[in-house]
Amino acid sequence: MEVEYVETFAADTPVYNLVVADVHDYFASDNMILVHNVGCGGGYPNPDPHMSAPPVRYEPESIEEVMRMRRGEGPRTKASHGVENIEAHHRNQVPISEGGVMDELTFARHRGKGQHTRHGQPSRLTQSQRSKEIYEHWKRRGNDYILPGGEGI
Image 1 (cartoon, rainbow, N blue to C red):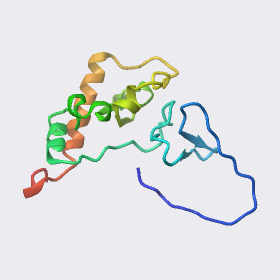
Image 2 (tube, rainbow, N blue to C red):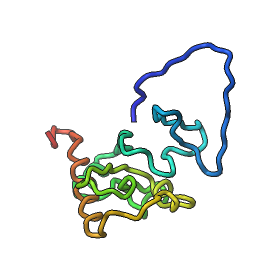
Image 3 (tube, rainbow, N blue to C red):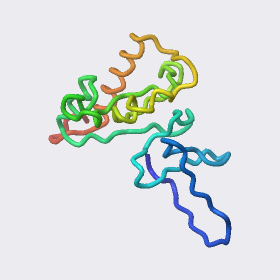
Image 4 (cartoon, one colour):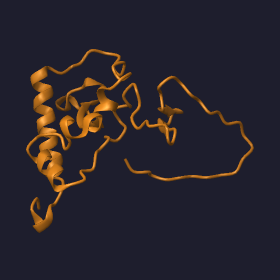
């Protein structure tokens, strides 16, 4: 996610520092501004962000990670990275084929402690549909990268 702009101004106005159990990210105001408390270990709101928010993307750190993605696999495995494994997440459990958004989250952020309350409604995905869309997502994302020698152009 990129910062669109930063606006600073001086004013005497009340400000509030909120702490809500295990919530480090939230949307503020009618403008749906995503707010994150720096240094708290957050990074993805719970419940899921609004469908209009940009997709959360992981940037591969090696050629091996890109190659895994091109094979339809996540860039990192649980065996090699534990809770820092990267998983594809259907935002609000809505299929991509129905206009859903796929986010790329660590295991800890996706399915770790306290994350099972993320959804207010049942999934609209079948297991086979979920698997197929995740596979296609990683293949498509892997092809977004050009490797040394121009492979991928």
